[in-house]
Amino acid sequence: MTHPFDLSGKTALVTGASRGLGWEMAKALHAAGALVFINGREDATLRAQSRDFAHMIPLAFDVTDSTAIAHALKDVGPLNILVNNVGARDRRNMDDFTLEEVRHLLDSNLVAPFDLARQVARTMPDGGRIINVTSIAGDIARSGDAIYTASKAGLTGLTRALAAELGARNITVNAIAPGFFATQANVAMVQNPEVQSFLDGRTSLKRWGQPEEIGGACVFLASTAASYMTGQVLTIDGGLRAHF
Ligand SMILES: NC(=O)c1ccc[n+]([C@@H]2O[C@H](COP(=O)([O-])OP(=O)(O)OC[C@H]3O[C@@H](n4cnc5c(N)ncnc54)[C@H](OP(=O)(O)O)[C@@H]3O)[C@@H](O)[C@H]2O)c1
Image (tube, rainbow, N blue to C red; front, top):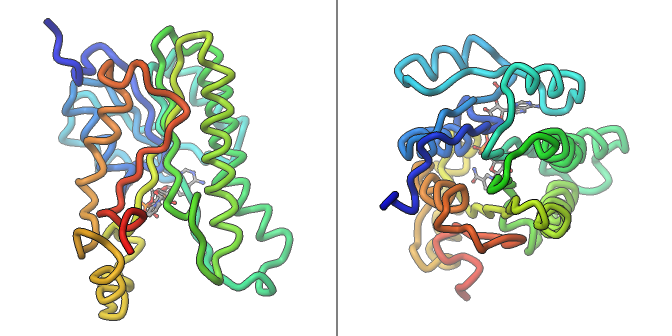
């Protein structure tokens, strides 16, 4: 009997996988047996990162460039698993954004996952999996972060809507909502004692998530273990949303 988390014979694309959570999810899918295309904008970084992994292939393109996506997908062929992980951050008060900056953030965090899902789904085989990386900000908000929050709430809605649209083809669409993870992007916050004290009071586990703690959720959603699960958000936040 095949293990329910076995991904042998599956082909995956993880966007924004040159570092951070994307890289951890790519490694976890690879360890479960998948052939994994890792994406980012810099080919040299992707090559260096994947050098020691037999079934990992760099696929550099900018997710906000629709033509570049189409060009890259032509070389790859049908994908069983798409992980839409790229998400730009820009935390500022509402009056500090130009509308051009607002549109740029929405392009990265919402339009690009839609575009990738649409292009990949056209040739995705039966049993395909689309996994969108949202955030706890998709459901809860704080001051000074309106556009990122709106983009992630939009991505959560998109997850449900695409699950409804692609369900008849037996393609599932789910989301992972990380809480506070100690990735490179958060180095300054990790060193800030005020943030640690916030996490002490606000999370059940009283700590930052380590990047490698995201991989298992991604493998689960990509595997046959999650075959009857779609349109859902899996929150990985040390209990932040469950705790007060
Ligand atoms: N870390 C957290 O605590 C946390 C919490 C909640 C949600 N999230 C979400 O989790 C996801 C990953 O976060 P992270 O902290 O791991 O991010 P990160 O460390 O900033 O990594 C971003 C990745 O995306 C790539 N990238 C950025 N823009 C791109 C573009 N336009 N096209 C292609 N690749 C692009 C980067 O590579 P290049 O720069 O080389 O292109 C890099 O590989 C995001 O969606 C974020 O919103 C993270």
